[in-house]
Structures are given as structure tokens and as C-alpha cells.
Length: 453
View 1 (cartoon, rainbow, N blue to C red):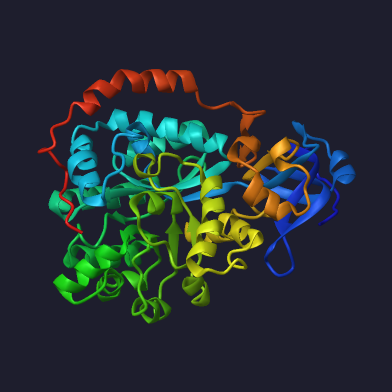
View 2 (cartoon, rainbow, N blue to C red):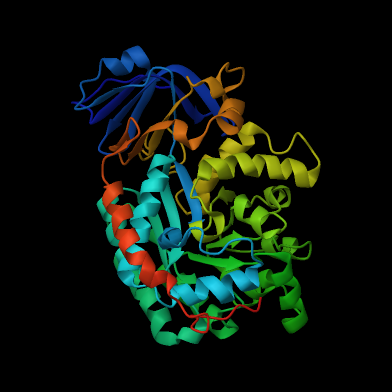
């Protein structure tokens, strides 16, 4: 921790907390009786609580009995799909897409996406998520919601080759015009849907545009083992090899899911010239009966794996806290090794690695001087979190997202004492309720795309 003189009043001072901060080895460590000083949306100081209490401040939070930790990052979601939560259950992926999701999305309006995104943001703020990487449609509307609610987001306008070049052009135009907006809280990515819905020529064009404009790419690839086997049967290449051959591994790319990454993909990823990251959303994989993201093998390559939820239509929840818990448990199960992942490793994935995955390393993901003040406070006084023998284990395996009391982004309080400050949840749910009858009156023959893996 630091101790420094204070120049003028701070915007926010948090005292009497236990702070999750980066240790000397970069792994998370806990500092008791800590104070955090925030100025101009930045963590100005992490010091002793008594020292922080001396700082003049516009606003103060007494965080007695609480953990201050970096806000969670949802590294891959489709926020607007919160409007479709529960609409397609207990189905294999082909039927899920072809009979339910892509038909209903053919009826989805821009305003539907906006209201679904408001619901998603309300859910994420209440669950301690301060930043999300969104891959969906009507991104101009999503950007408006992000601006309105105060969250941080990386936004990519999704598109398929079947939609024609004008939709891909719109995705680029949005990425260039929206990045840096909302006071710098919005970053942008190019967002082709996947190698099985975007052809090689279009993927190569996207790689060239990403390099030219300094944009990352966010897409689905090797989502499951069946997709990898189908790609090998049709093209003699895995989806990861398709990314290599089209130049996408030469730029910064965030790969959603990657549960179909196989042994032959590992040297391909190791040779990538771009910054490669993978987003892991374990709850959906359990629902679909898939394998899981090979985190141990990716760790050996130095590839960060951020935590995610996917959309609420498949995952049912946007609870990254649950993703953190499930990631630790599922990895133990698939490796048959109780020492992998540890609770501290899970926290590292939820914070530092997730920040790296969305291209915000050194910006968010840590409570440290110079980082953005994206902070959540977690109450550990409930019976389900007591007694505390190991804080990391308590956070990962005992605490719940409902224990988050306060959510802060850029030093601005978005939720205080479990009460949303920037979003009107009753209004959101009422508006979505009004819209749902039109949405569910879909024709299964009307699809925006056809899934064939």
C-alpha cells in the first residue's frame, strides 16, 4: 500500500475495508484495514484506513465488514438477449438456434435490444459486474444504454456473411465512431459471428480492417467439439486453423468459448502474432452438454482466459460470480485434480485475466493507483460466509453475487446498498413485459441464419 499527501478533495473515499490488491507476484492478495482514495475516476491511493480517512472527500463509504475488490468483467455476452431468457430450454444447440433463437431474433427490433440491454445491465450491476464485452445487434442502441447506466463496455456489432457487405460495413462504422465515447468507457471491436457463418474471404477482410484501424476482433470459434469435427470434415481445418489462415491470429482477437480447441490447435495459438484471449462461460456448457474451455493448456501458452456468461437465453443468468465458482469447480472435475483451479487462481481469472481478455490490462482488473476506479464492495457478514478461514476461498466458494452491496465504475456509484442508482428496474421490466407478446409470436421458418455447425 502507499501513503501520500493529498492534493485537494477526493471524489470518493472508502474506509475500513479489506482490499483485494495485486501482490508482488501479480496474484491477488488481501490487505486488511485498508482505505481507497478515488479522484477523477482513478484510484489515487490505496493506504491504511486511518490515513484515507484524513483525505477530504465529496463522498465517503464506510465499508466495515466488507471486501473491496475489482469489478468483475463479463468477457462475452449478448446483453440484449436478456429479453429472451428462458425461451429455449433443454435443447441441443441446432434446435436451440434453428427452432427458437434465430426465428425470434428475426422479430427483434432495435428498441427490444435496448430494453433487453437495460435489463442485462441492471442484473450485471447488481452482481458486481462493472464491464462487459457485448457481441450483438443494434450496437448503437447498446452504446446509448451504456452511456445512460454508467457501465464500461467493449461493443461489437455482430454480422454474418449472408447479410451482405453492407452489414459488415455498418459494424466497422460503428466500431470507429463509438470507440472512446461515454467518457471513454466504451471501447469497440469488430464482431464477425463465427467461422461457420462468416466465410474465409470476409474473415480475411476483417483481419485486414482490424490491423489497419487498430481494432480488436471478438468472435465465436471452436465453440464446441462438434463444430471442430464438422470443420475438419468440410474443410480439413479446425476453426482455430481457419482463424490462422485468414489472418485473424495476427491481430488482437477474443475467442468466445473455445471448448472445441483440440491438441493440434495449441501450436497454432502459440504461434499467433496477435494478442489472443479466450472467454469461458461454464454454465452454458453444462446446459448444452459440451466440454469446457481447456484453461490449463491455454495457461501454458500464456493465453488469458476471462470469465463470461454468454447471453441469458443460453446461460439464463448474467452472473459472472457464478461463472467464477463454476470455472473453479468444473476445472477440478475435468482434470480430476483438486489443486486446479485454486480459489486465488479463479479470482485472478475473474479480475486481471478478464481485464486482459477485453484489452484493458493496466486499466481495470486491479485496485491500485492509476487504475480506473471500477470497484465493488462485498459483504461477508452473512451466515453462509462465516466463519472466514481463507478469504479467497470464501469469495469463490461461499459468497454470492447477492452479497455485492455497492458497485462503482469510474468512481461513480451505480449501486449503493443493493439499490440501483442509474437504472429504473420496475420501468424496465414493465416495458419488456409489454413487448414480449410480439417477440414470442415468431414463425420458426423465419430465421436470420441457419445453424449447421
